[in-house]
Amino acid sequence: MKQFFSVADVANLPDIVDEALRLKNNPFVYGQLGTHKTLGLVFLNPSLRTRLSTQKAAANLGMNVMVMNMDKDGWALETRDGIAMNGTTVEHIREAAAVMGQYCDVLGIRSFPKLQDREADYSEDLFQKFIAYSGVPVVSLESATRHPLQSLTDLITIRENWHQSRKPKVVMAWAPHVKALPQAVPNSFAEWMCRAQGEGMAEFTIAHPPGYTLSEQFTHGATITHVLDDALADADFVYVKNWSSYEDYGKIHPVSGQWMLNHSRLALTNQAKIMHCLPVRRDVELASEVLDSPHSIVIQQAGNRVWAAQAVLKRMLEQLS
Ligand code: CP
Image 1 (spheres, protein in one colour):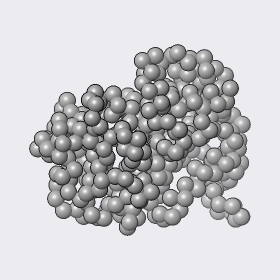
Image 2 (tube, rainbow, N blue to C red):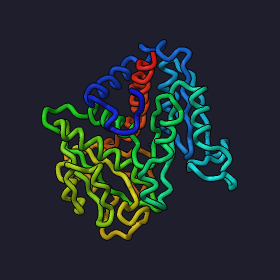
Image 3 (cartoon, protein in one colour):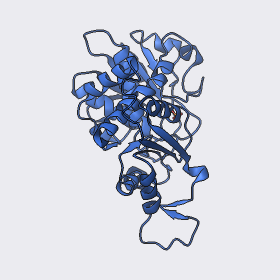
Image 4 (tube, protein in one colour):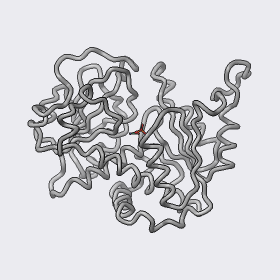
């Protein structure tokens, strides 16, 4: 594996889920694989789970880890070509990424969208340039349009919590929020679940209010509804997540009706397990009574970030050696 950016970088979904679960059962079995190898984690945005889980995964594989808060500690990056750098940017991504590639065997990059210009965000320019100029394998720690380590984690968590022969009904339910959030997590979850559905692993439904349609490139094959209660009927898993508008890019539209999942809504489901990538705003996105109930598997889900990261890093290390 030379890059981990989207579900397209995974040849076989069940294989990588199984591998992550084997690593969870036996975390240190590949403890020598990363000896004398360095992972660089570059953050242009905040993180709790991605930062700590990826560091732990790398440590389990015997890697050295360097973390850089590029937004706070690095030089202001220029990504455009063909311009004189006589403004506020100090270092071009061509040099910055190439230099990081000299120090690191694998790089992880987190870079959120600015939510101003859809075409610019969805071009994934910065991420693609890191891949092009670093010369080493690159893992997405969440890009403008996707969060693949989260989505792999989500699939692992669904697998762990599903013990029936029929396919689980998985619902991604839009939830309210006070600010405009990227589409990266829902895009990515939809992309992975549509692939899982295509491979007979799940039935996938998305519920969102009018005005919050995601790009069809991520949702092809999903059942999509504007009626949350219809989606929740007989759901086995409900993945709660806010996102801002893709159509009216980065904007928040007023919504009618109640979109926050609470106990009375949960009663419509098949005793569903409740998922969220975290961080979550209690009693805005998701009711505390649900988060604090046995239905919630958000902590187990966050814990599984380690095994998703470890499975991906293991594959990259194997390709290096
Ligand atoms: N879910 C997730 O990526 O969490 P962080 O933003 O804290 O890394």
